[in-house]
Amino acid sequence: MKIQIGAIVAERIEERLGYGFQPHELFPAFQPHMLEPLRSWLEPTFYDAAENRLRTSSHSWLLRTPNHLVLVDTCVGNHKNRPQVPRFHMCDTPWLARLAEAGVRPEDIGYVLCTHLHCDHVGWNTRLVDGRWAPTFPNARYLFGRKEFARWDARRPDYRHRHINDHVFEDSILPVVESGQMTLVDDGYELDGVLTVEPAPGHTEGHVRIRLASEGRRAYCSGDIFHHPLQIYHPELYTGFDDNRTQGIATRRSLLSLCAEEDAVLLPAHFAEPHACFVRACGGGYAADFDEVAAQGDAGGAPLSNERAGP
Ligand SMILES: [Zn+2]
Image 1 (cartoon, rainbow, N blue to C red):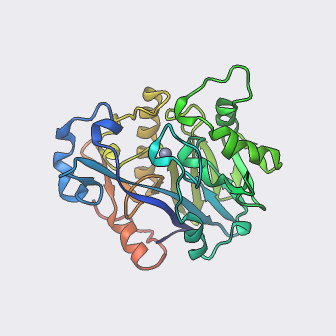
Image 2: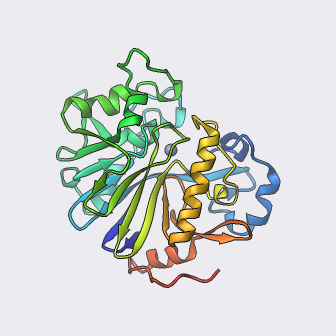
Image 3: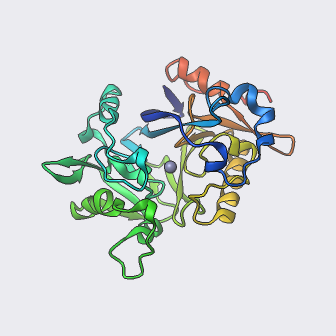
């Protein structure tokens, strides 16, 4: 599926897709009544009622800008030692084969951008070569937010340990530092004149969103600002993985308002198909509009119309 945003083409590279958390496991403040008005379209793509499980995805966004191939977020990766999260432990997925199906070799990637440095967003930064972790993309600059890198730099004396991210700095970040491929970027950093790194704190302190702006079109790679479409209707739903839930809620609300105002495409990291949507202001809140994105994907990446879709 390809989504065209002006001169940029966004393509999803899947790692996994399926049923996972029960709603209250992912969202501690979840109330069953929140699902009721949405069930007609949430089921079965985004929610399995029989099992009471949310259906989510783990994927990267491959962005073809006029000058470069850019990967946003790199999933869980293969063979990573993650006993603390059993479904991320020692994975063996065909993510690299799917990148190849998109016509891209690891050496073609010019930039890797991580919205944050949690284990399911940095995994394919590296791969196992002769028993050692080596950068997967030999010609890429890896762009990490300066604040986010400082938060997870396990070499710092003031490092605050978080069990969920055990081993991640050592196997997925440090090899990139040691190969000299890392560039730390500040909020406002621009790439190719079409991508901008913007602050989006809450899920982690240094979490960023990536703004795509080309030929009058806008989109946002939102990382973990959203985990599930339910949060478009209930931005107050924080996850147990958020560092600062109040900040996370404010960040979610602010992106919803921007997307609605700018008619921008939301490119989240964990939504099931069609994986991206528009956001419409609706009855004092917001609604997800998947139809236009889905139609464009079926057309193989035909440009999005500049006309705003109906309510
Ligand atoms: Zn995530």
